[in-house]
Image 1 (cartoon, one colour):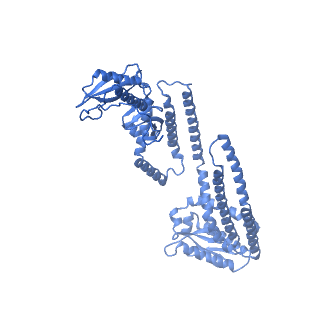
Image 2 (tube, helix red, strand yellow):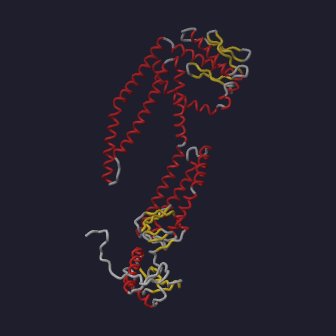
Image 3 (spheres, one colour):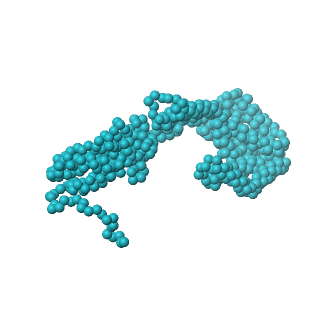
Length: 537
């Protein structure tokens, strides 16, 4: 019987912790925490009953004296029975054990327990009797043997577990690593993605290794506590050790059990949100494939609209789920959310402005992917429009990131957008002296435009007089092209052809400035032989 009690004691202790937590709810917190007014009487780590104190005799001091008297009575004899006597005293009911006074049950104790003083004295006497008999039994020869056997059994179990942990740990981890690497390699072959199977396996194995060590330390902690619990003299220390771990674990378990309804509601909200997101994806996929037709809805709006609808659905789900989140009504959680909101509001002005600008860029249709645009002094082809930025590839093959706020607040020249059927108007300016016939200049500029590939013959190129300068007339040649993406090359060819036509006709280009007429006109008189001076034959 004694051995069975020692084996069942750890289980009963864990259950007792949960029961004690329930009892503490009914006990006034102020009195329970104040040792001057209330304190427990503890013998061999087991609480017998509570006693009231006063300013003259604090509760802790009174409880300590009762514990000493119980230990003296228990040590004074080895009998398996005791003689109890309850009698009237000046301050209440006196309890004697084997003729020795142990305690006096006062009217204050009875008022605290909310029962008659006679009943309370009887219950305290029974608790004292049980504690004395257990005290003597635990220190008897038979009790010492049972305690030693229990400690030996726990030590044997711990030794076997420790041997298995240290001897088989490496083999188990290597086995897990090999299986994880095989599975990761299979995923790589199936998805053709660049995954590092060894790295993934190492991270998982390392995590499992840490968990194994944590479990082993927990096991060692409980082994030490149970060994100390086997001996009467160390049961108090053992119960303190168990209390430090068991009570938090039980509190966590009870908290999880209490939050099961909330967790169920959170699971329902998550499931409904997931179904809603899948429905949105299905709808927009059908819109993209053409199964559904939405009037005046651009194709490039599908992806951002789907993203916005998903985000809105998730935000609504979070609003509904907030009251069911554990500790959401606590001051700490509310303070944390307020702090996070302040940090986001103070640090995200630029981010939010770029996000809003990105939505305007997407929906106002000022530019699309593939268009050639000019923003400030940057010219390039739009490769991607993101929520925060727009990426363009310049004509020099440079990738340029432009914040959407800048794109929204700047003038954007779109060379790919067709305004009408004539195309983009290409133009360049040259300055020619007043002595040259204007009709000749006009004919030469139109000839240069006709020679340039990429410029349209219809509508016909035309010449404008842009300025009557001090020493020259500035003529502007204008021609249409439908190849806006090749604009730099077309302009370069046009200027080259202008120089060739003017040189052929002996006409000097006076741009950018003119001082005086030279003796000989500055025009090309002979063709280049194709050889550079520093290149040897």
